[in-house]
Figure 1 (cartoon, one colour):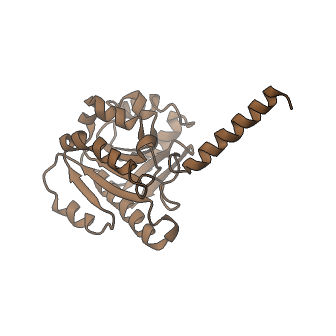
Figure 2 (cartoon, rainbow, N blue to C red; figure 1 turned 60 degrees about the vertical axis):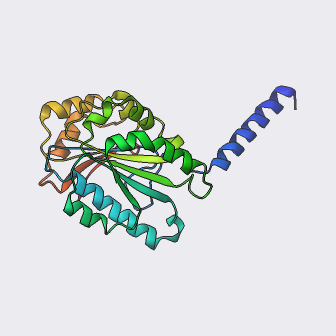
Figure 3 (cartoon, rainbow, N blue to C red; figure 1 turned 90 degrees about the vertical axis):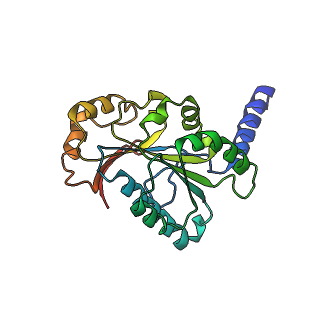
Length: 241
């Protein structure tokens, strides 16, 4: 074996060894085996007001919460949920949150912006928590895309072992570099053709034609149905909750 061959083999071996020590915590893969949501990425929920985007998120969290209790292999994989909103107290949402057995911290966008990175520093310095996934739910989130610090967080999710579930009314204001981090898109009924067309032009990772998406989207019957676009698996399906 000459020096060049030795260096190539050694470099590959040490590279693989380094990746193996990281585990799969920094990968973009399913949050749990029973969920469509992905770790270390963004799920985007788009739809007009009153189309149950928040209810859909709560539905997903209840499923995840229950799966953690039933499957011991994933029991300690979720750290907490941040519920970020500038809305006043919603008694219905608060009541449903009591059914979720994961720690939930509600805060305004201002407080989240000021304190999230400090929280992440503490989390990553704790051996018991650093690989657990943090879930951040951003309600009525359009204005967050004007915040450079939050944009930076959204593009470094694997470093933070965190995933975002972001609700907006239209998709046109979402920066292109943020869309590159999107794993799932949930479309509610009532999106205009103009907004639908504009959103499609920015979905650079999907392999469906605009006509195919529109045909599936037309099948939505009520606000409790969403058209889910899985950008990682290149799949579309209607979910009903």
